[in-house]
Image (cartoon, rainbow, N blue to C red; front, top):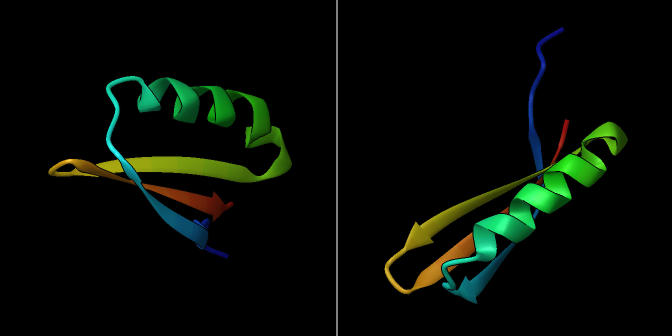
Length: 53
């Protein structure tokens, strides 16, 4: 069976330089629970996605 990341939710926020610190913290804390967080920047907006692994 393939290991896939299944998107659970996405939310758009105003971009802030330290958002990646939040995403890093969430990944370190919740990876063992099967959750992975991603962030992408589009102009002045950030898109945070929650995945289930």
